[in-house]
Image (tube, rainbow, N blue to C red):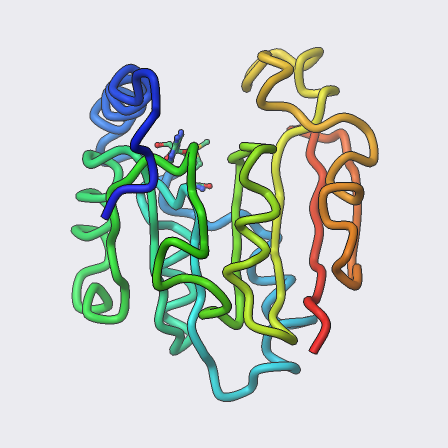
Length: 206
Ligand SMILES: C[S@@+](CC[C@H](N)C(=O)[O-])C[C@H]1O[C@@H](n2cnc3c(N)ncnc32)[C@H](O)[C@@H]1O
């Protein structure tokens, strides 16, 4: 499956991330889910979907969030450009791999309507990945009543010692709320701590 027929050169991005995952191989930090996922799960996901469901993890990397959700009994599809990251996700998942559908692809030109992913998921999540152009397509992967769980860096991250500095990958103040216009926002928070982030849980109308 490919979403990216006219991508100028996805190979650079792919190789950059492959190298990061090769260098980080075995590092525990890649496997600890961001604390926002367990919080969003107990406060929003579990009450709405007590019997589980299907989730899509955009740019899911080495699988820390997909695996955590699969452990809670969910079926998860993980998409990422890095075959090294996705292979690590498969290895880390162990027996849970049978509950995770692993997809290596470039999301730059993702179009939900051209895939089997349109209105297919109770939960769509993205952690530390920002591609503004496809935000509305990400939302289209949600079923009516489904939840978007999104967290990524804000511009304030550029002033911190580590982490991404390129504004193309950093949210402006309030930008995540604007991107999610049309969804019912259940939770939103911007924070500058160890990382500078914005996090959101929002529901698609039924
Ligand atoms: C900061 S990592 C976050 C990974 C994961 N969401 C997590 O929190 O552990 C960003 C991820 O985006 C992926 N990525 C970057 N560009 C991409 C693209 N064009 N299509 C799909 N994935 C991409 C990278 O391979 C990497 O796994």
